[in-house]
Amino acid sequence: MLRPLQRALLLIAALSAQASAQDAESRPSQTHRAQVSSRQCGLGTSFNVLADSGGIWLYRDNGIPREVFFHAGELSIDHQVQPIGAADRERLRKMEEETRLLMPQVSGLAHEVIDLSYDALGGVVQVLTGSWLNARKIERLRRRASDYVDGTLGKGRWEQQAFDGNFERYVEQEADSFKGSIARHMMWQIATGRADGIDARAQAMDSQLDARLDTRARTIETSAAALCGHVQTLRRLQDALDVRYQGQALQLLDVDPEGNRASNLAAARKQKTLTERDTADDNALQLSHAAQPAADNR
Image (cartoon, rainbow, N blue to C red; front, side):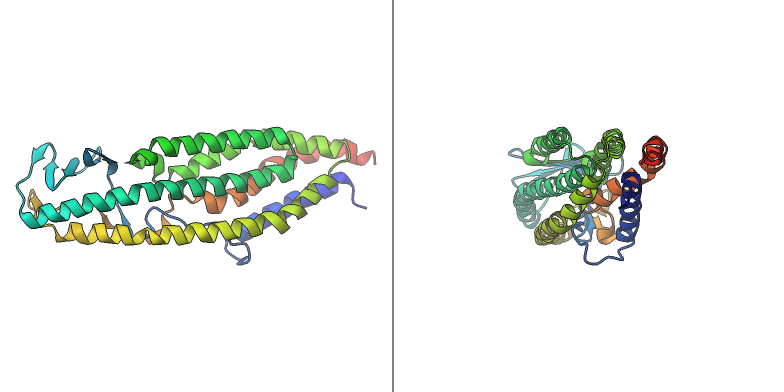
């Protein structure tokens, strides 16, 4: 039989290789990394957005215009009411209606991605530590992320700083907080001859977690694609507006040349592999040095 140290180091090597292969998309059977992006409809916005009962407010720190507000067919740009025709008033009413329909759906999608992200993170941490305390910590992190979505998207507020690529980094930072715990648990299991438990949990995760996440990821991608209809409608209404500001047509939504490559919620598709890879890189050498005396004595 393999010694516990050898088993652990082989597992780490396997996880690292698995992560590299998945990042290169060379394992099509592992599909639970949901391909979801705020720009996957081929459109994006440089504005923050607030949609509430008082109207639709778009604002940003740089660029012209800085602020656009419309409600009930009236339009204000940079705090100046704009004279518009009847056709534009009707288009703005429809844009307001579409935005109100879109926001709660985006909020619901964000909650689904949060659940998928933290389920993937929790699966990896469970394999490497087997600790119920870490499971409780992950649930607290999940609730905190969910509460944030409720307080922003749930109230009709889209903030570039929070959601434009930063959700991915946020979940990665949360995963970093488990590195120390993972190293301690693995060293303890190796030193006490319990490394076989890591293998058993890894096999259970491969046969159960991946299949479950695959199904949920496909559902999320389908839901995200369905939102494109609202986004495309908004773009058509915007492009039809006759109003001009400083001689230019309003560009609240614009074509994103990166398409769906710019991921806002890519933590859902990356979290499992990132956690595995980082754990392998950061802990393999440390585990080898710490556990070598225990292995030599066997």
